[in-house]
Amino acid sequence: MSRENNESLQIQEINKLKPVHFADLIRAAQLIFDPATGVSGIYRKVDWKEFGIPDDVTENLKALGQEYRYASPHVSPEIIWSKLTPATRIWFFENRDNLWQFEEFFPALDED
Image 1 (cartoon, one colour):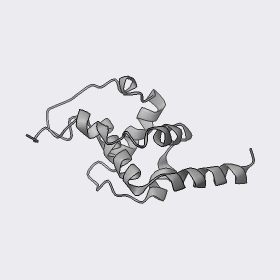
Image 2 (spheres, one colour; image 1 turned 120 degrees about the vertical axis):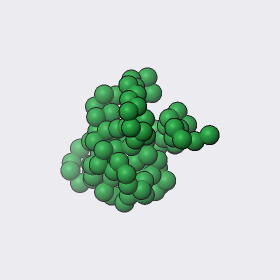
Image 3 (spheres, helix red, strand yellow; image 1 turned 135 degrees about the horizontal axis):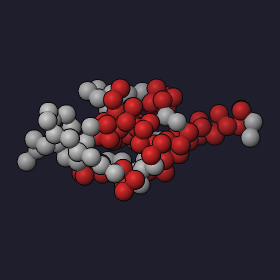
């Protein structure tokens, strides 16, 4: 596949993704980086493979979660896309409609 065709495919994929998908990805990345949601003294060890996230994708998302740890999840999609590895892009595209579930699995510890 030529470089132009590859870039075109990436643009088409981005066009199928909505801002809400990127916001969900940032929030999921924040939780993957810190499953205890920042509560001091609490550490949760999570096997992300049980959630269908391969190790290489987990590492990419942890780095993203660390970078945007305290940020609003509404970051420019182009910026986020540029920080994703090819494997993470594929995983993200395939799981875009289920990312919101991570907040259900790891609710804030101060919620009722």
